Amino acid sequence: MTERDLLIRGDQEARLKQTYHWTASVSDLDPKEVDRFRRRLKYFFMNPCEKFHARGRKPWKLMLQILKIVIITIQLVSFGLSNEMMVTFKEENIKTLKHLFLKDYQDQDKNYAVYTRAETYDHISYIINQYMDMPNLTVGNHAYERNDGVYTPLSLCKEFYRRGSISPDNDTFDIDPVIEKECISVYPLRPLKDGSVIEELNFTLDFKRLLTVKVYLNIKAINLQTVRHNELPDCYNFRTMILFDNTAHSGRIKISLKNHVLIKVCKDWNVSGSDKDYHLIHIVTFDSVIILACLLSLVLCLRSVLNGLRLQSEYAMFFRKYYQKTVPMSDRLEFVNGWYILSIISDTLTISGSVFKICIQTKELTNYDVCSILLGTSTLFVWIGVLRYLGFFPKYNILILTLRAAFPNVIRFSTCAVMIYLSYCFCGWIVLGPHHENFRTFNMVADCLFSLINGDEIYSTFIKLREKSYLVWLFSRAYVYSFISLFTYMVLSLFIALINDTYETIKQNQQKGIPGSELQAFIKECKDLPASGKYMDPEPDPCLSFPCACCS
Figure (cartoon, rainbow, N blue to C red):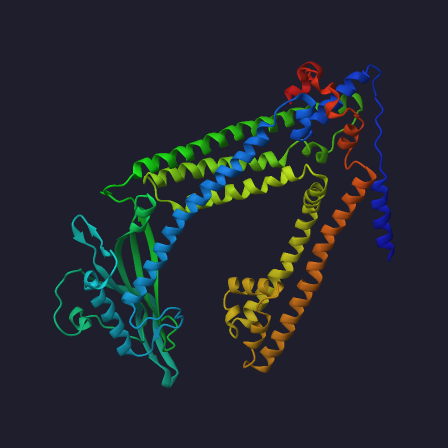
């Protein structure tokens, strides 16, 4: 054991043996007033069950939080099922459009591309012909988009360098990097002559200057599967772009289909023989009950936070007036209950998400993503709030105290670890990016290294670099071995040691009965039990005893 370890252990033992003493600086301090104030502080930090035994006050916030957990979870599951139908409809339509407009497309085909000029023209002609005959081909309820009675045309655009003369045989080129764009429109239901569509449209490509060819399609559909679940269908507008990417000029033109989906409220609808209105009223009523419950919880938690701030001011004034001491910030923060802050945030998100959900159910809005984020985050915070009530039991409480006490050290340690992690990310991106597909972009490098920390993709990361140059192969071994050794065996071990050290310190404090702060030591001198009946005394007006506290 080094000298530094001995100093650290000695400092910890001294802190564990620390005691607090209070000597009044004024002679008119009433011991009964001090005991009364201690009881107020002790009552404030009691759990709901102890408060019930002390004053018979029913734990309304506890019961309300339990009710919130149940109804918010039911709301989330209901919305999740509706959201799942929307996501399924979007994904299946995107897959349908790929099979409908991409020639010879196969699922999971990541290398869909063309390699000759004839194939490029053939694929573009195939897209146009499929689009013109789409109503007769599709088995779904797809249709062309119409604006003011006019069909939206298919747009065929090409992007190319303004001027270019490239001669690889002479190792010479003369190019103007300014990019120009030309587009032609093809209207649906337009009669086309027999023969090549490309020739009729007079669409030609200079492949040496060509960068991209983009085909824009606007297709509409209606999600009818929601009718079976007593929900009104939404109307979908698929803004589709088929991209022929020749920016690399490598002889391989990659083809991809991208979609931007717009969900809108249908203009005119009618569902015969359905009790949708009755079902909708029940859903809206349930969401309204959740909003009222969260509003009540929000008011109660805000009141508790304000009472804590007021008592904090009284405590600071009490020590400054009678003991000539300044209360440290750590003691002040103990009056601010983080669980109430979490509950306030959760209630705000739930109210906002419920309003969005009501608008979606009544088809006033279609912002599924925003509603999902609000409701999902609020449910996350509600369930995390359950830890507060588990903290009433000693065996669970030590775990919560450990997480709270270790959090500052964990943040500082993580900041240092992130610096090392980013350095490996940049190094791997620059050196291994050209030789390994998992290191092509910075985001891919970050994902790959995080997987290595968790023991995933270690073998595949090594095996994909076997056929590279010997120098790169040697560097990749040193890079991966050093990263795994540093983060898996050192960083993670130190991370666990930080939490374990905090756990042992708190455990020793609890076993020896040593208070963790001056505030806790001051409260501990109050020996009155919750059922003693001494907490039934009405609280004095703090503005009479400590007027400055009320002002602050």
